[in-house]
Image (cartoon, rainbow, N blue to C red; front, top):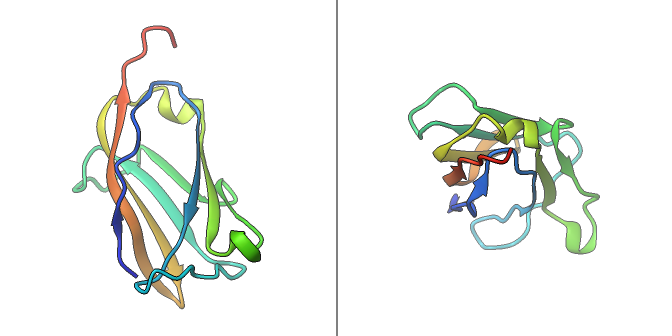
Length: 119
């Protein structure tokens, strides 16, 4: 499995984000996400930061789709307005999926959040 650089589209403070994520292996084939697959998504101030600004896991912001047909390897990620309201700047985000008891970074990159004077 190769981590992909995913630089998110810019958002504004207080925006809601719905993302559909597909997990691929190093041969570019979709990976079936078995029941109980651990997935963690996080936003940080930088790639060196340890503390989460936003953290999502299965059951709390991440929903694994039924693994059939076009939904094999697919999960939904929801970031709420309350999550993004206090954020600002070019943040770092990363997603790790545990497959066969091995944690794998599936993507990482920047997540730009703009100041919103209206929210």
